[in-house]
Image 1 (cartoon, rainbow, N blue to C red):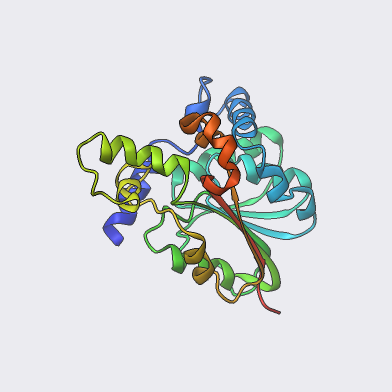
Image 2 (image 1 turned 135 degrees about the vertical axis):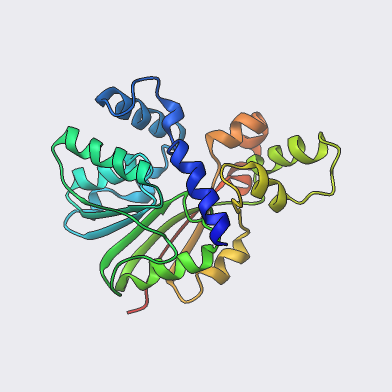
Length: 252
């Protein structure tokens, strides 16, 4: 797992998530603005799930800050925000973004499976599309819960195995490649972003988040599903969406 994690880190050190959405020079205001605009267009549902304004005055941890699009919105809203990422690249780019906006927040290069914080340090832990990349996702979730204070809120997005995106990857890398025996999980682990990327079923998520109070697991159909399935994505709705959004509270 150590070697796999290093390969994951190497992958994201080359290009932080979202960089592809800007043609502007890295680190200039236009670069961040274009990335933020494209993220809002592709994933408009983030705002309702993240509830940026609701984080005002709260101790918030984001695991996997990427280019900081969500993180900066929490900071703008007045959260006491702390962010971590596995890569120096992401942390450096987010620090630059904060400097450009004249804002401050705590940022650390850290491993989601071994967070450098004491138990109960945060009121809310947020992570969007990150924890399915670390080799031991279940351990990372346990860490996220550990650093929450009792009654604190956990908000996580993870990929869904039974989705148009996953099926599209299977058609391309299994069926059309003459290897139809390959599983969805194997295809995603080898071809979706960094090595070992996982996607889950609802039952698997229930087991991983067992013990969380008021647990809610919803599926969301995305622009990425619509790119693959076209009108079929509208017919199937969220049932074959690519993103699971998970919310709940640490027991008091």
